[in-house]
Length: 199
Image (cartoon, rainbow, N blue to C red; front, side):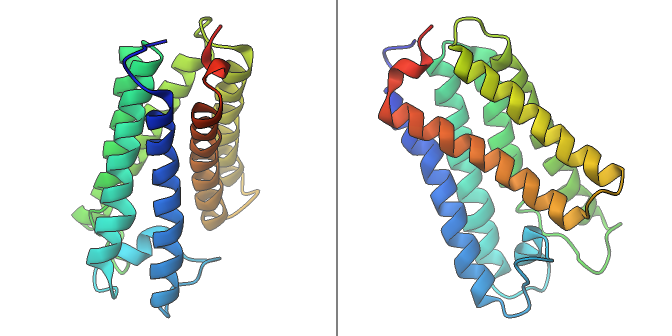
């Protein structure tokens, strides 16, 4: 592992992104009386003409995305894997760019399409990062297996929607839960015990 990167700092960056997202979601979700935590997409909080959209996009998407990018960059450096750094930091940048506000009344508008594109690209690079970790024999089996299982769960949640097993709002929540669940577990292990990342 890279001794110049402190594992606790890397873990704190990742955990901070999760905590900030949860706090921002609860705060702005409760502040916006029209927002439904069960049925609405999180993107609605930052959509055009929504109250507090500017602040949600700044805090919930941009600030969280910057923290995710910093986490991804330093995590890859910590694992001595430059390509992993690139993949995970691009995911963070993609998350920040979801601050492009959707037009909820016009899904075919350029801004709505841009919003969806950056989400898809960000998730693609996150999957690339998981794949990269999944076959890195320098990592412990526990870390590799978690990366592979997480990738399978993410793809499975999307396949479930395609086959009509659940709705898009449920898929949306599954994806967020999987992404930030992995980030939370990984961050906590980095903070608590570094040796999980040693072969």
